[in-house]
Image: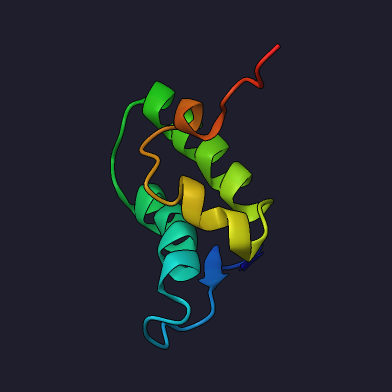
Length: 79
């Protein structure tokens, strides 16, 4: 996903079906979040969540695709 600084348009790969649904769903959250009027805290958390999702490869993305906030993407490792 990339953005055009002049238009704030997002370029996200089109949903093709089941084969790319999980990655598409994870990436479509950012434009939706930007379009909704939300509190400053929620906006920052969604930006963090989007940043995490954009930096995760397609395979592991399925494990965090259902996360509703950034803290759900982090699991401390066992000692």
